[in-house]
Length: 291
Image (cartoon, rainbow, N blue to C red; front, side, top):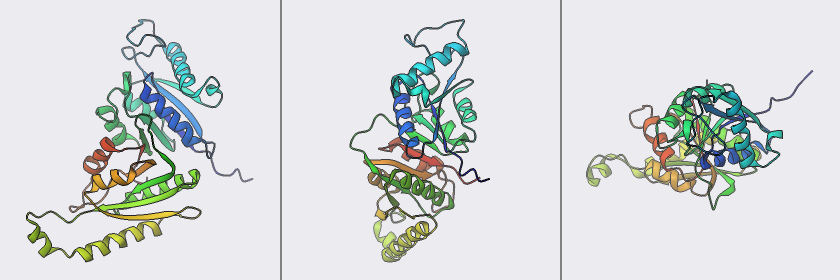
């Protein structure tokens, strides 16, 4: 007997910070269109405690029960008094990044806030978020502070023609379909810099490069399922990061892959993806290579 497709599972890292509350609210909205399973996870330790009233308090008797009670209260504060009826909660005693990644193993999406307290201190700007992005085998969403002027019906995928960027575009297309949103597929490009502009102009035909970019966009769109959604390919002649950020401004979510291809055919997680993670003007989803 057919049981139908499995429910998506979304895991969100939670603590007492405003950033974690924003991430939890965004994750709840992401789960709503297809009734995805939502799990709130809090990582704690003996010296990394989470208390309901006094964040500076330290309790030598602190344990799983206290952590569980605190997490339940954080979820209720973010989503309402009845939140625990629709959100599973889980506490994990571990180091922040490995604990959260392990708790999210098998999930379809792991969501974290841009900034946090305790185990998530420095997210996006510090080491924990980078560890999560490098470790996680599933897509990771990084949610900045509550955004304004966001268009809920616009999803942006940044691509460069690499297999991982195609994976990111597929994820974005599925998300756009769930949201009933338009999908903007952007490829930002510029002339290779070889010193003075006369040298560059002599070596590269701009019309040929423009045609190449358009062909790359078409090839990516042809490899994704666009049924039921409006797709808007955008070739933008701007430095890559600046171009991606410009197009993503006001979008409901920006999606990109962890690896792409540049002039040296090298991994660019440490350059483009990391820079975008610092400057993304909207929630960012980073998609790892297909397993």
